[in-house]
Image (tube, each protein chain N blue to C red):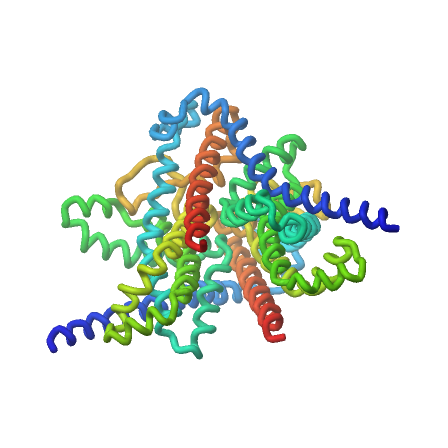
Length: 280
Length: 307
């Protein structure tokens, strides 16, 4: 009987530890989100969005250039990365589905997803920034597009594989060529999945900092020209938080607030799309 | 008509094939670029010599990677030490203990933890966690551990909060969601019959977990840990804020240090002569090889596991 008691006590301890760790995870989440929201909310005002940075010491100022730069860099990355990723993933799932090379590409893309993004920055610096002779928003977009492609290739491949083969056969039977079958049947059926992959990849790259450090760099003036160094929210947070001025810290918290809210909304949106897909 | 379709289909196929090949091309091109750019440093310092030399002195034009490699490995190791027990606990909780009603909410919370940008982790670490470490936790650790011989060496120095320990802690919070969700998924894959029969024999919940679930899902959990290791090795922004950038090797965990990625982030745009830049590329090459190896092992294990 004593032995049984001992086992029960050990069981109780182990289960309690496990519950404790789960709450520890929640604790970190709440801790981080709460401190960003509390400190960020006090830095949030209209000036953050409509003014450009003021020189240190002068009150006011905002991060208009960073918001605009971030948007431009991300949009160009989407324009390059999404079609390339979807088409690449299409090859893996459709034309080359039994080929050896497809599983190699798939594995590589999977690995690239967790690859140190700073190495991507170093790479793009060498092949684009150095030959061009200056930092540019465009180079930043390419760095982000490289990260995006690997994510979208994988999500596209997985989604297209879920589409039943019979659906394609039905279209083949009507005499449709494969590319039209892909375009009108496969893509249409997989639309929500593809959308989720794109959403995920945007959420991921729009908060990347390391690859932008040596590519789009920074710029304290508003620019709409992607051929110039361009400010982004994340690099600005890095610079401002590391800087010595309290006013800079405030702006950095304001920007962090915007990013965290953006990420939470994006994630919940993605989840909502996924849940709708499975509820159908 | 038919041949027009054929042509278009071929064009579409070739286009998608080219873009799929882009993935191979990019990973190879990265390796080639890193090799070519770091060549002057490889030539000058060699491989073994560079890895084990702790001289990083741009003024004297001598470079060695040992300090950055040491910092990378120690912060990663600390992160794993903190993260593995916690995330296994979370995985067990989510798959075996948590009531179904709360499961979704808990999983969502853990996954949101994964989606918080690393720059936010870094900033939170610098302004929120570092002061707490400096004022409360590190002085406490010193009071406990300093009198103990050998272990005390790890806690020497003035607690500043900007150090290896804080960096390791932040990294661990970042990788917890990865290990936790992979272990939850593999725990869920354990056949129900196996678990039921163990319960049928009168095993307690913990015994079922320890003797049935953990051994059964060993490979999955290990590969999850390796993937997380890959993440921790290359993580830049979260660490850049709270590690300083100090190219010296300290035994103490309460000293600032540097990692490969932090050195890159801080010095890359400042490297003003060829050998300096080449040495940084050399570090990036080492990071590339380390993470590729880690991720490759994880992939290999997972593939064998799923067969």
